[in-house]
Image (cartoon, rainbow, N blue to C red; front, side, top):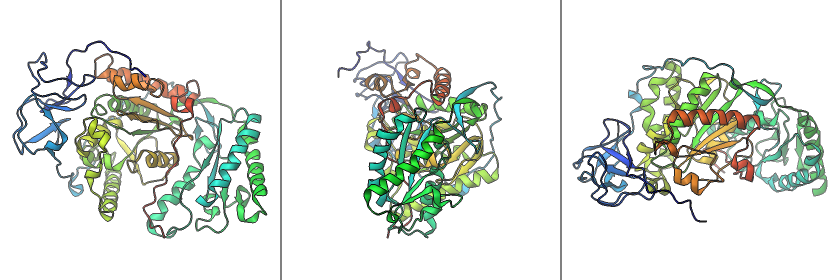
Length: 511
């Protein structure tokens, strides 16, 4: 495919903070040696798009500053106008958790926004779905093949009879047996599965397929212990009866789900997850700030908004704990950072494992720079609650939901926390999607939006070129969220049926 040709651009760079001694190049394809900017800066080497240029001479050992924060120290003297490659940057130490300020700069709550609604599916427990889906939980990987066969038959033979039901989703995973089921950290995958089954987009119609000899007994996934919600394959005499039993139980639930109707709900019933993947140096200046503005709007209408990814928060946590609404929330945030520090240490991994090679090609030098751009998604609201991995959200407002940075694991955990819609920013591009909840993908660059015109839902790259402001794109995203939640608009991922597998976070031993 030939990419859309753009007009020749004037040379542009973005300097985020007055203290910064570096900037990133905006122009598609980067800029060659000899390029002169209106301010008088001249490039003495080529600089790729999104990569850093030194705005002044930076001597060896001197701090490199972006977002007004130290992202590293120069390993060699870097001349003004030269490309500051990631290999020139020594990563600084992470913020010391025991020295963090807590609840010292709690933001004032922004004035509420009244009158915003969406058309959702009201559930008996008060939650609201943005989709109408039959979810079938599994207690162990052993049953996945049988369930996949049954789900295909359900979609072919039953689903057309229930037009109000959008999809049938099998919640398959690699957990359930061959694991240390009573290990302390096993609580994470178990509560994740328990809470996944209660996601508001499933309408409360719980159904579990188990084997019969697994360590994670199916009853643990049924809150009321009702065995009538469980199909146990070892109780059946052959494959066909297994499939028939699954289909009969599914049909009873399809009948109930088909009666669900969208009704007008206040925007406060939204539970929105925020995530980024395939990040680049533009993430922190275009897409993530726009998402942060939209996050503030969602908080103002009374919604729950979750941001996550511990490893992409850890190096900027000193900017978050002062925003904790109180000491308890601040300590909970520190607790999750410490848990993950210990987890990485047990695995003999360190912070340099993040970012990915693609992140570096997009201009990110290290996880410190990545973290500073990542947390911008959280906007400016006070942090009112902290969730451990897989816990269900019960508060309204801005919530930190602790997850790994892996797209698939983070998405799975946010679904377990009750997310009914996700906003996902990307600079390098990813076709990521979730079957359970709509995923709105926001690009950081114009060129990515042009290249992936039928995968990107909203382009924040216009902010970098001055075609739109952060506020413009933030409001556009806010209204798009309401439209997608209402079923009035469909994300590209849902249009194409691009849905990633769920991925449990299991830090406990596998036996």
